[in-house]
Amino acid sequence: MSRVDGQILKTTNLSLANHTASGIWKKNIRSGVLARLAPQLPDLKTGQTDMFTFTGTPKMELVGESAEKSNTGQKPTKVVARTYKLQYTHRESQEVMWADEDYQIGLMQMIAENVAAASSRALDLLAIHGVNPLTGNTGGVTDYLVGMAGNKVHIVNQTSNADTDMKALASQINNAGYVASGLGLDPTYASVLSEVENGAGVQKYPELGFGGFNTENVRGLTAAVSNTVSGSAEGLTTGVKAVMGDFSSFKWGIARNIPLSTILYGDPDGNGDLQRHNEVAFRAEIVIGFAFLDSGDGFSLLQNNAS
Image (cartoon, rainbow, N blue to C red; front, side, top):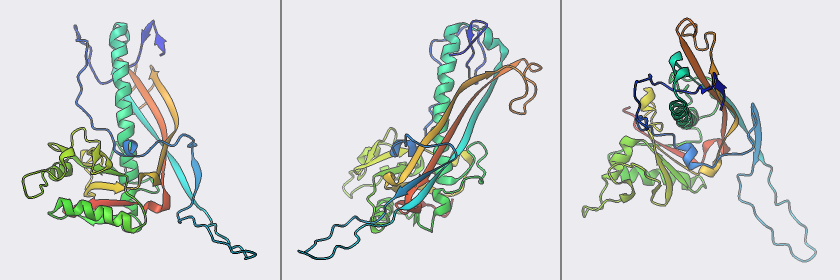
């Protein structure tokens, strides 16, 4: 923790009050799905990291006495994990510098939680939709699921039968020689899926309860629900409602995590001079990277063409 004038200067978008309750309320933000469905890669480097992978089935050869041996190996393919720099900048009134330490610690903790949630959401928006998380505009992202859709990433068009759609997603992955391990759902589609019954008034997907809140498993698949699947909060119109895949074929990691810093002078975000506006700014930066092995062949997207 850094200190200036004896105080901890970390804050978020809150104004100071005369009296403050011990807890700080904030709207519950659903973080992303990919970070919850795929393990983090520990040795990702800034820039590009080459990964070699074997996509075929390894085979042994039965060798007879004095018989010749064949080449049973296969040449590996190279996949490049590219990194992207993300930043979170927030301004606050200078009065936060004079608040008591407990107040500042609470604000620091909350901004750290916001950065973590924003980073998780950013991974989805980059890797699924290929967009800038702040603006929703495409550009700058090389490989992402929507961009690879129809090439190797499989597409299932949403029908009126959600159960059939789920089976179609799994079938596409199985037919490609993969085994589905995870499922990411948009909240609106999780709600639709939760209403599917078996004909006797019993839910086929009881894990989804009233719409997927806090869901961690669906039909044996690790599951997560977030509006990053559709990008609806960012105004995206890709129509993605669900993503199912073999998440062992998706690699991601944090190449660099730059600690939260306090900025007292200058114009760090184009909103005017800090001293003139009686403000301080707080910034966190992170370098995140990811790659889809075998060009996303182990993934299926459920899309609504009407979106």
